[in-house]
Length: 417
Image (cartoon, rainbow, N blue to C red):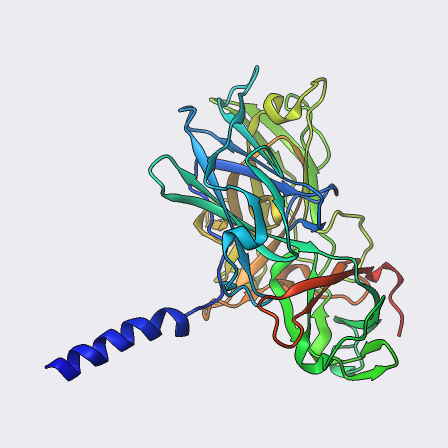
């Protein structure tokens, strides 16, 4: 028996250190809407900020209770496993503080409370090191409500990013390939195949990011990445969009309007685009912007509207699991985004409650094995304009955490062979 107890105790000691896994963002409950998370750019998700800059979180609570919410900040390795740093090593000040800045909606049919948090602030004075971070929001019962990832970088390398067509003839019309050149601004990067790790993110969507890329070869103080399949993304298609900044009139993409308990906006019915030629249609790569006509503060004066989406089925799509997809909910796929087939009108339909603004969206298929097929309805085209960000991590020999030492950005608008 003593031997069994000793073995059990050893197992308890080992498990916490051997069972770390990638942290995932937690999605909010239905009454939390419009989570805006940004740095000093207009993009509303996945802030990537320079060390010393600020990050802002905004969200709406539609339950009308004026609840108290608290935030916590944690540091992570490049692969989103927990780092070994103590709070005091990456933060000056304290977290687990109440979000004090909130306002109630003004002159809207849907009542809501709008919360805003800026970091740094009086309590959380400074985040001291670069790397991956997770911001988690809790209620007054210390229950996790939702969480969002962000990144802080140091400007220690120049990261050149160029977008090419795939070399593989099978995918030359569908895929885009990312080439990278990393140039160290100062010291030599020691043993780069072991210490340098690179992540490529398409359109700020971490769900489709490519991780753990190693340099193919070095040239002086440069690291060269000229892969084909390893750095290739399906091109997708331009996002569809609508704008409803004037809730009482038909705006871009809106067919009809109805006022019930809230306003209902019915979008023009969309069709499958995968079998049609590519057509350039400027978008904001899946993003959204909150905006309202004749108002000074869209954060509290924009109303919530039921947006009705519809899609004409093809024979191949009739038995598919189809969803509305975009950054409006952080690219989440769940029952609220699923389109149901209306047999009477032979059309797919769904309604989603969204705040007034300009939105990008597309329709995607989720296969039976749970794999997302973004191009099944929209198609995949090498000409599609996509944004790519390259994040460069460095952990020197003997170091305890992964720094982010550079950020590069490129667009496929100037794609070349």
